[in-house]
Length: 45
Image 1: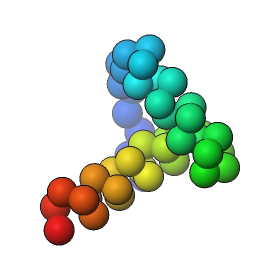
Image 2: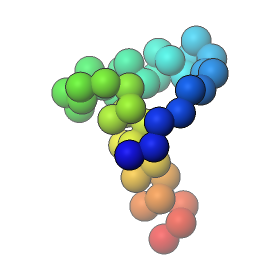
Image 3: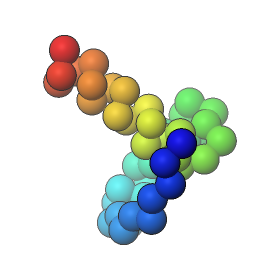
Image 4: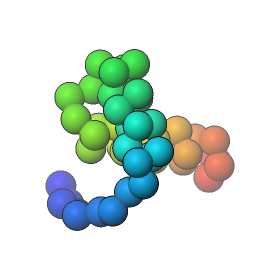
């Protein structure tokens, strides 16, 4: 696992919290992982 300190906007923070609640994730790191997987599926493949 890689750890990173990032700066995000308040809007992005709200989006991560919504994803966290919607999918029952434990933390914002899992929200970011979910977004990366969805991006990969939608854009890269």
